[in-house]
Image (cartoon, rainbow, N blue to C red; front, side, top):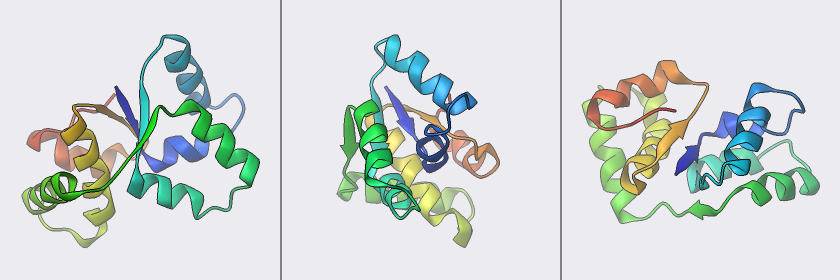
Amino acid sequence: MICLDTNYLILGLVPGSPESQDLIQWAQAGETLVAPMPAWYEFICGPVTAPQIATMRSFLHDLVPFDEPQALEAARLFNAAGRKRTLRIDAMIAATAVVGGAELATNNRTDFNAFVPHGLKLV
């Protein structure tokens, strides 16, 4: 299972981008693609059109809710990574991947690397 960060959702819509090529390759290989609800929220804040939202949604097996297990893991990751305010949403996205046993696809490796020593796996 691969969990998509917001930048993968956005750049996956750009024809020929590395992200769109990854999404196509993963889908053709039968990989399960999911999006954490916080990333989906960021994505649909746009600007995006209804057809773009539908296109991206068609790649996703599921939108993963942000419930108590994800919140507990996000708090753990946030605290373990040094409590940087800029990492709050990233901790929520990372936690969704960790709780789901998924790898995270992101272009924002700089921030997400802070969570790798604490259980996050990046694609």
